[in-house]
Length: 356
Image (cartoon, rainbow, N blue to C red; front, side, top):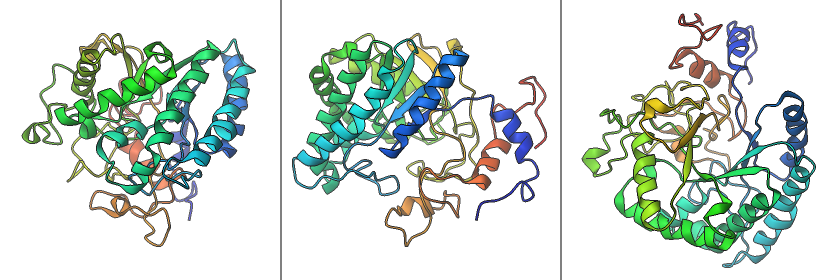
């Protein structure tokens, strides 16, 4: 049951502060293509930069259940699913984008898709979707690039997933193959990291290792170190000159998980740094911005074990329970994120935290 302002008297105050921060618009279904035009109309009027997540591949999120998509692979080559994705999803998105050639657009392309092909091919849905993932992403990037006003970032998961040397080695040829099929590395500005996840931001001068990754021979102890390692690996495979954005919408608290493999509705987490292009403190010259990709307050997945989209991670020891289906609003979770914000929320973005 959705909470009301009476249940959370601070919600209005929290919303008044956080509404100053824009998050990406997720086009995670064919129906949600209808969301694009109002956002672009608003951006044209205000001059703000709209950011969209392109997210509807066949067998989407193939290794998990929580955010499985609407398009399925019906055979090993996923021919029909890929055709549906191209004609009923990507082409329809492009049709709307074409109406606004003078509005700069940022696109984050298919979170978690290609990383799954590097690490989770033993999962039947991933093996079945390999062709659709590669061809689908290449098709999307090619169409977006042809528009001329879209800056694309291809998703590269996060350091707690791909930070190990063997995973970085495995994913590099996949990215190279897809970008070659799309028309070359020029079709993207670079990569997005930590989308809808909770990995610490850190910096190149930080030694904190909240997930104890070094003990597991993963030296991507935070997203700054991961971006550095990932970029060096991409450069060695010929993908040079890449730029990065990283999601800080929910990584304000870094030590809240008992197991950093848990990713669903993490309790005691908090809002992270606000979106900004002022990132020199990270110690990296190729980071374009910190962004809020995941909308704070939207669920990662349901805790209802009877749901067909239930994933056991959503009832782990680190999970916030109860939680609704992926993408649905959870006001309790949102209030928790706001109260745990780091930096703290302030009514004027000044030094004193608003008491909420």
